[in-house]
Image (cartoon, rainbow, N blue to C red; front, side, top):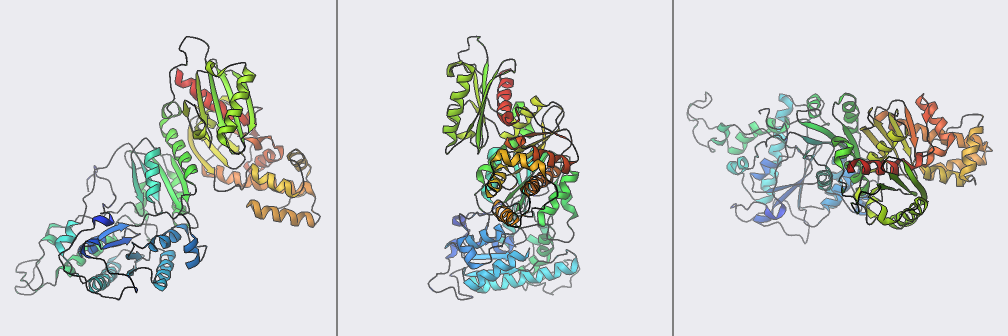
Length: 622
């Protein structure tokens, strides 16, 4: 393959409704279908598959359309009833997918233990008419290719017996899709199974083209050699071909095809299941690649290990995301992807801020920045000289829009301004899209970076611990985002975690922050889950453990979790802590102990996001 072609590409597949028709005649029963279910007709035979090692070209030779399983379930209720709840998210989503009535044929591979479990569950449930598990070798040498060829032949024989169709070499060869030209200036999605919604969200939120390089995205089987297309049919003479003696038959089209195809299919870019996966190092930092989004599945370590190694050596920005097989975190995912896009393009270029002044009469400039968070909504008005005219912090309440309107009203009153005096309005935070009449919305990652650089120009790492999430942002000397990581899956290690444990000890937050400084001995809090930590605190109180020691243990647990996030982005001093938890001196000191460096705070730390939004608005006007 030439350097102008990508080393991998998505296998184009027909949709189920477009599955190719065949002239093989009526389908004969190979194995009896489930009672009450009809075998598919000639033009609706679709094979569903989850893995790039499934032989879709072989199955296309039987006139079957092939459709990848890139599905996210709305609920795992049925999957949990069929299998163990600790099955990974992809395994559960695959079970939910297979239980749909239009999924009649499913071919799996033994790419991991979960796929074997899924096969066992579906086989026992009788969920599909034709179910097959292709056993994959761990190695890719000659003996493994020969064994793999045998696996493919067994599948072909079983599929032919079940469907009543014959293998057609021309149809199989026609199903190969040639490599597409590589697109320079792109972002690569790598890692574990990438559902269509993830790929679509990446392409919606990023300004650069996105190539899907997940293990269900890229599927590159080398182009068949011309001699394969000229393979003689069974029983024909092979005079003078490959040194064969005249009149000796070479076997049928299927055998001839499999002799070549087994090695070509097995020797794609290896997945993490393969023993030798060194070639995957080429996937990060390839020419024209501006960034990498690395996807892992909850409860799966295969690709998590690769990410850790790749992140150490990568010269391009990398963003790690984790999904669980559902769309429950779609909002947070969009935030992280948009922030990554802003990181790639630079803070002053990625956002779309209206550059016209309200009134355009040459009067004073006032820019409003609103940070709509889960717990509080912060608002700042800044003038054209980057001076904070007024600021407020109010409770968000039940609705982000109502909390924002309250904050805007109060900050205007403090500034002595009317709405018409505002030149520009910029929103950030999780609720930014819910605030009406704003001129622009920018992610909190970009805004916190800009605000932190304003408050502490020497800061290289921002630690923001808010009400329900925490984030660590690594900055360059100009305040640009080098990398960032967010804990947005649960409230572990956040302000909500501390509030819940304070309630368990019947302390106000003011008392909680103060008493933690009076500790005498270390107490280990083993649970970061808010619910379990509350129970652990109650047990410690019942054992007469001093309250100050318990609070210090909680502070240290938050600091340890935050330090683990900081390590992932290669954080470095100087540190600036923002967010509401920055007011908790015990947590700040615990962070200093764990990080081995001083951690600064600022009197306006909680306003950091709103300040950054206002500053970015001002920059856009210039």
